Image 1: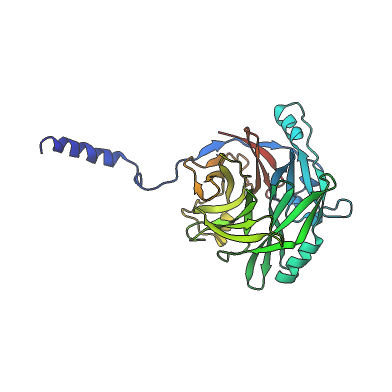
Image 2 (image 1 turned 45 degrees about the vertical axis):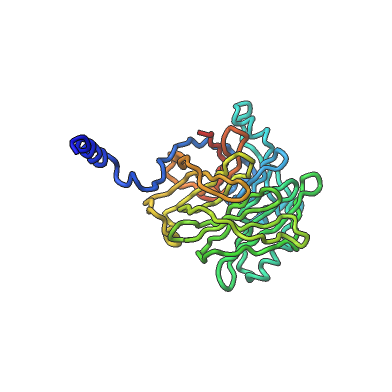
Length: 337
């Protein structure tokens, strides 16, 4: 008893010195990362572009406007593309002039009509995400129908040596909605081994108590075939995009919160201000889990929240990010920590 008493005193002192909640499963402190803007010019630099996603295809960064029909190219709606070499030249300092993204014709009219037939003419809310699997592209679409929010996936393919993307109307497939939250659907998708994984935008404990990833076979004969769902770890705020999957690499997602979202989201804890960060997940083809590293906070010295809606890895250097129209169109680079 005499030997145990000093140990008991020491344990009590140690307990008092520990911060509150130290024994709880807490989120580790965030890292902080600088954000280097890459200037754009031309139609893609307009806030009307309202970019909602991006991904790499054949060494070109393909940027997805939420409403491609606002940007006509050769009589069709369009997406935008930037060669990787042009981005690297700017970041390496060998080129300083703004980048003018080229336009890619986008055949989407029949798909938009099909969605509006289901949701109603005013239900169309545009494209939200893009992911490639070889030459196949998969897009997520958001709409508001008679019974609330709706999400869709549709398959597309490059034609004419990469100058044109045509959507396959027959592949249009609805995505199960886990909950009904105004203006929330599927803003993050990635592909792996012939499947596409769709992640709902809101996955907080109060907002979506049982978050899941919806899984589809990309190459189904009659379209995107639904395969079921995988559990997704709870994540507060919004998941607005996620990187392409590379074996052995983490999945990195954009995690954003604007105080105005308080009208529709109930985050734990309430951050009392905007949140701009990257969060990390592991994926082994069967399950998705949170990784142990802390979130990466994006340093913002402007005082204006930046609604990051797209992310793509840039080799092993870091990440490219793009905003929608808030506060304006911004393409940026964030180095790995």
